[in-house]
Image (cartoon, rainbow, N blue to C red; front, side, top):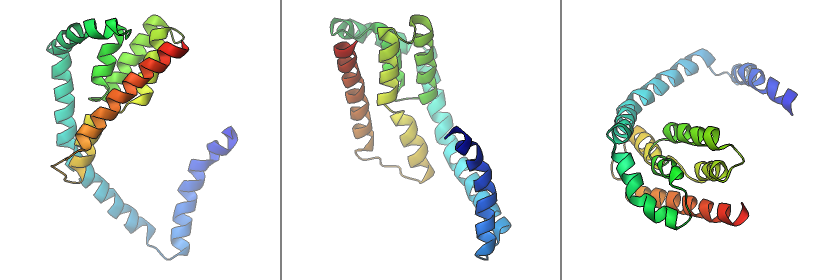
Length: 172
């Protein structure tokens, strides 16, 4: 399998243009048109991406996250959810890379086989960067009214986090 995966990308790089040439497609012109459309998509996504990154950084750097963690930490620790995991649970719907950084710090500090390390991995794997996905992808195609997508995404994140905590407490 490992040796097969080594040749997949070179085969695609050679095979796709080869099939295009056989079918009579102007490969270079089609590639350039696709690159233009990709660039337009990047330009359309960029304002939404910048707004999301600024909002996440403002939330973290303003100290608002610590206030939220302290406030709900009392409730979650009474329910058996370690307070150390709250920044991960709060940031996961906002930003995948910020939450990955927090998960990596937790695993580095407590170890991958610790309860916190395992639960951090489960929370990261069972939830999604919902606000990021909605803002970038919906922004790319011009959807301004998200209807129930935001509510459904955040609900699935909360359920994923709670189920992760339940399963981790039962198994570990």
